[in-house]
Length: 355
Image (cartoon, rainbow, N blue to C red; front, side, top):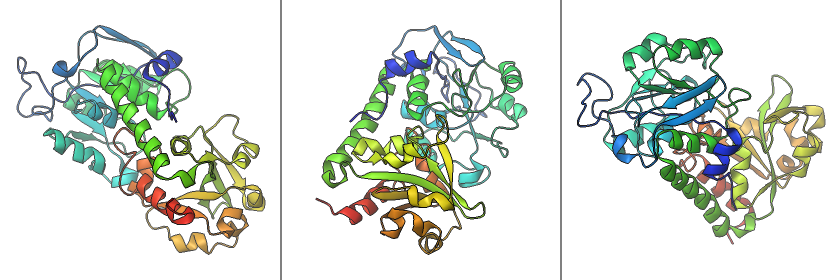
């Protein structure tokens, strides 16, 4: 089962691309020893596509004249996409909600170490993109800035463009670039389309193999939610959200009730009041708990017992900020993170048996 568009289709449908730069200099043009990129991987040697490459995005076009050598990433997913095709960025946006200040996501840190690349500068992003640390970008000295899955504004784009060429998100809404498109377009912009296609194929294969290993999953319906007891409602994720669509690659399907109750007009989530929870019918429920949230409080919630799958005990949970972040949305390096999808699969197997 295919869980994403092909590389060509993703590029064609979006008419846009994301750019990433390498974290290191080539041997012929060494970077200063005191830069974060001085020992990072080499972009030029790994490029297989022909330059220049022109990328269209929400704020215009960017022409990549030659294989970029230094990348700064902003937003979500492009760091992992670049690393997955062999390019180590010199500066990356911090993920305060997930891992705190001045830290790397664990799968990102592991990949830098595996590549033997020096860790990047972590660019301050305490406001989830509302402000941009321009001076830190200057210090990172990128020759291209990648923000294909972000919310940068026209003003932010203009200022960043004075530092280095920038690619924003595709035409349409900010923070709406599909996870697979982020991978595909990043690879294309780096001149590594073939490597990007292989990454996407590997992800497809991973989920298809899970379905093969667990035929009992086939056709089981599910709803994915986040409870908000202070608001007296739950957030229901639609198939437009990657945390839903990616699971369908292993044979489970979004419950018809999810679509029937959808008030989002094509969005990736909608809210459902506690009074309506009995309508959310599915074989099982997936929920996400952040740090400090007690699983027992979910199980013991009288209001949530109105959901048929909860009443039946058919609930699987992804627990903790890092684990939740690994699947929402998934990235080129996080889709198989040990505490994310594999935990969900183990719980689901426990519900329905392993064969």
